[in-house]
Image 1 (cartoon, rainbow, N blue to C red):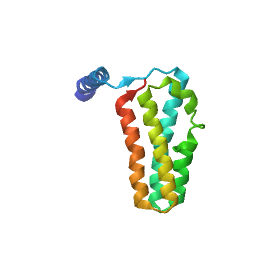
Image 2 (image 1 turned 135 degrees about the horizontal axis):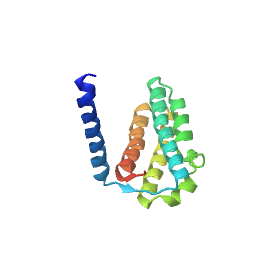
Image 3 (image 1 turned 60 degrees about the horizontal axis):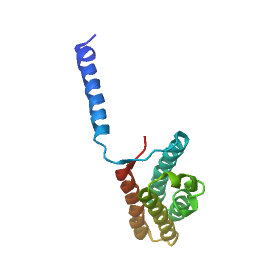
Length: 144
């Protein structure tokens, strides 16, 4: 067994675990308690939101603004609220978290309209509003 496997690797793993614990202890974001099934549902929704943004960027890169608009509205926009179970999730969220989510959904619908109009630059600007809402929410809140 090499000295790396015997000494260095265990030390690095121990340090990484310590850093992770310190990071969790220093996390000042508001903890949002959710029932386990709702927590998994919310995490699944957020992963889908991220995937939708990736698909929107791919479509825009191909100059397929209608496709980008469709993805945005159906997966992120106001039309997506029912499919994401927003009505069931909202009562468990702090008001600021709900507001951030609503802001993201409204921005996605505005983006979809601009993309349908063929205004790529304006649509890109609105895409930034979508991601800014995501960043603000993730910066202020956490779930376990």
